[in-house]
Length: 388
Image (cartoon, rainbow, N blue to C red; front, top):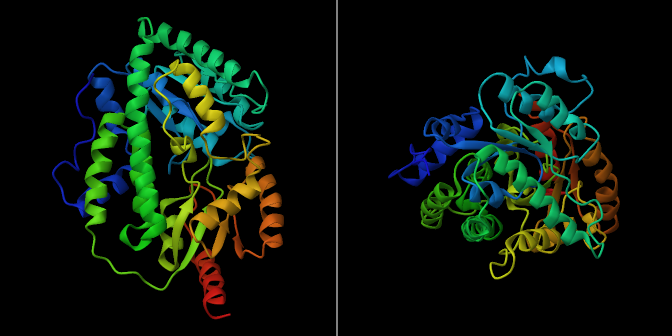
């Protein structure tokens, strides 16, 4: 396995660790992926929302989260219609511009726009591009087996890239590593909920996001160091409104937007990069690993507008998230041109109104840079909650 790819934070105090993570995310820095490739490693890029990263890792590949970036889609713009969401264009731009180089790209038919991404990606690159069909019916008796079989099909495509037979024993070991990584992320979110003044919202975001670009072994080491520093932080609580941020399941809000909301609110829970923490419990390691991953996706998981599950009504899940985090209000957003997100807002609003939960309704785009008007609206919303 290649040696460490992201080392700028090594041996540094917490402030520098957080700075290095912010810089990597804010500046669309994929040098760690380039380092992996220079050492002979292969890269599997996977689009939003969820992907079983353990499978790529077990095959010796780096699973790279393709989730757009703060870049101008100068090359990709002509490949898409102007009425589509930004994340499709900036994701393809990362590859067309040479910022990232892949050996395999995997997409998901999460919406009408994304269902065509794999084909467009494939027409513009020489390496394979394919779709992973996560189940539309999450409640059928054969759903788990279907998904395990679909994971098996993915493994066959990976074997063609690596030239090596897939080892399920290694998959079980990869599951153990990712279980540890996700447990550390859950620890980070527990801090966000219980003592949100100890870590800024944008810093917590970057600590999770960087895990989509570096090997899981490195992410574990990074999180352990950061959590130790965060717990030792002596910052004091301030008088801010506790909110849940909802609507970032696919396209991600700009880091400056998260920072702006965090100036007047404590973001005590959210769906930022939910695919990287979609599994909410440890994946079992004492059964067939493909079956374990499939069952965990269905039964030990969070929610999003692109998974249809009768056992997880999303509006009730949002309320449960807000209640568990003791949130006063919800910042309810959607990416511009995002049909699943905008459609889900209707059920969210109806449920929040029914339960008399205050909410701030807005939309965003990953490349937006002007936040003056939006910040004034957020501040007015917060003042109404505090003094109204």
